[in-house]
Amino acid sequence: MCATLEKMRDETARKAEWQTKVRSVLRWIAMGLTPEQIAKGEDLTVEQVEEIANVRNV
Image 1 (tube, rainbow, N blue to C red):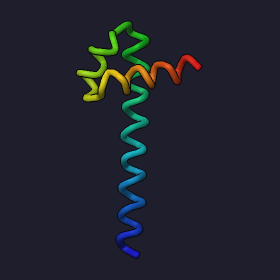
Image 2: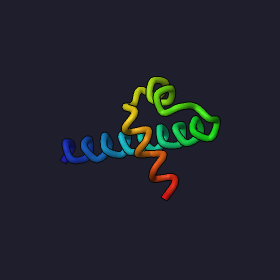
Image 3: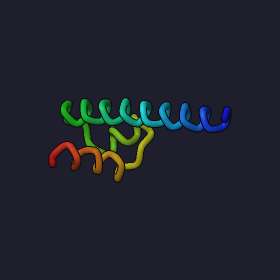
């Protein structure tokens, strides 16, 4: 039971961290930074930044 709760807690924390990164990436895009700059600043790959940008444009 404890392991299940810990797993759920960890998953919730990962989702919250990802949502925070997505919001940050969208702000950086709005400010005109390049995907390379954003990736370096947010510790993401350029592909991840571009994926976030493409989802926003859908």
